[in-house]
Amino acid sequence: MDVVKMSNGRSSKYECLLFDMDDTLYPRSCGINVACRKKIEEYMLKYLHMDESEVPQMCLDLYMEHGTTMAGLKALGYEFDNEEFHAYVHGALPYDSLNPDPVLRNLLLSLPQRKIIFTNADKAHAAQVLERLDLEDCFEGVICFETLNNNNNNNPSLERKCNGGNGIILCKPSIEAIQAAIKIADTHPNKTIFFDDSVRNIESGKAAGLHTVIVGSWELVPGADHALGSIHNIKEALPELWEGEEDENDQPEQAMQAPVVETMVLV
Ligand SMILES: [Mg+2]
Figure 1 (tube, rainbow, N blue to C red):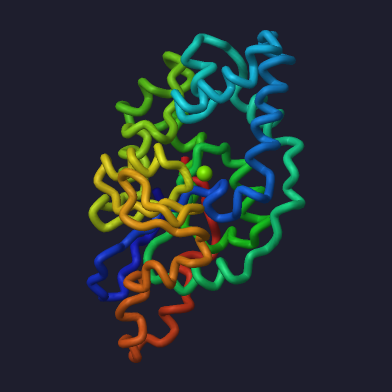
Figure 2 (figure 1 turned 180 degrees about the horizontal axis):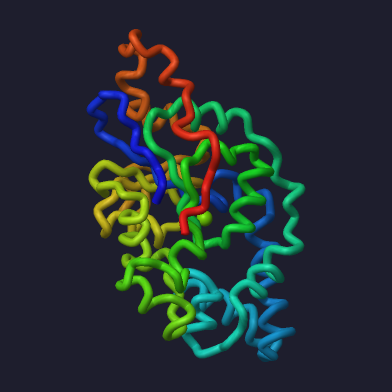
């Protein structure tokens, strides 16, 4: 991974922030999630010829059991092309409901820690969402479907789990997926905060040793260290992330400096 750690001489409690993307960086009310599920159900009907009466429940059950419906379908032995699946499911989502978010943008750019996206989605969807939100350059990298399920992955322990192998898709909330992301991000869980709207992902994140923040809820859930109704409230809930920034008068530009200018997909 061609990324550079922050090296501003500060000894921060946290060095890296891992952000889920969908329903974490924008509210669920945008409708992407519901539209996405509809498209997956359509795919199951149209291309996998599944029983119409069973598809909605099965879609949900597989999602709950395997982290994504796609991972569940593969685990059941359904064979289909991953890229075609993603293209179908993400090809007609209501991306127009996502608008530039200058408030979040400024918050992210003012954070001194390394910031990385960690999503189960594919890279095309991630790129589309980040562009619509005008957040592409706020992250040093994107860990996505292709990152964890790439046959060319140099990590042999991951190779066994790749979709080209035995049909197992590596994705959240599996602990292996989270540990793989930590390794790819080249960070220490103890120095890393993980933001996600999924209770299961947060539980796994905690089990992997990460500090955790459930987003989209003011209620703490099992495994969560903090609860954020909206990612916009990050500064109120976690002021310690900015601690020490004001004292660094010798480096006043540091607070508004993005670590890198271009977001790269980590594959
Ligand atoms: Mg999410």
